[in-house]
Image 1 (cartoon, helix red, strand yellow):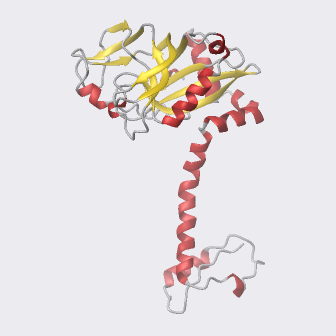
Image 2: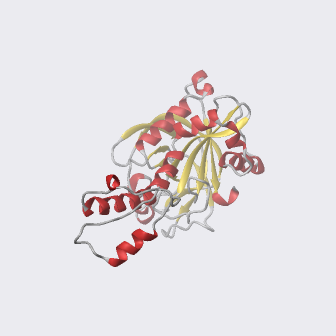
Image 3: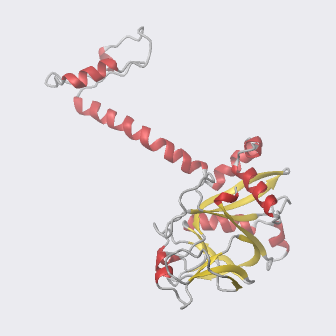
Length: 288
């Protein structure tokens, strides 16, 4: 197929014509006929713009589609070998948890809730920026003995900027310490905006550090432990974290959070016991 950009009689721009003459994508036996001509130059400009837009947009859209939990579940069912590849995120997460000596739930339908600090959707470092959704919330499951990603959402394990600059307590905003904690039950989260939603509510102690200097850096601060209302909820679709999290493990999307809760509540252990205590693992991107 030959793509030609020919313009009207009044359009004599030599540079455009030279570009058109050099745009040959097929063999020379492709014959150009008048029936293929556009009736006006405006349609040809529109076509050029559309082709450029598609080339820019298609890849980000496909990447976004690939991270949706429904798509991931279908891929895992159709092509289970994909999640068994040595470099797949599912396998890397599994191996990281093994290296750390963390508990891994292997039963059919059981969920492993994992947060990766400072990672994009593919488990690559992204700068770990404060007040941005620069972390990931992931649900890892095992199907026929192989690890698969059942959900992958933009999230934060860090407080937003308002919490850092003006913490609710004088001792500074809390940053959860990487580790594994069995500390959450299904319940109702009461957000800073007065919004109530279903989430995972902290009912047992976790380890954390306080940002005493209020600069987003807790390195060197003492590790503390306690129940501080560090729930797992949504970020109310906010572009930035801001006041949507004062210490919690929050995912940006409301719909994504609902999908997360649906997967979590499908765990057979929760069906047997509505008060089941869920474990959650917080990893750093460098752990992968």
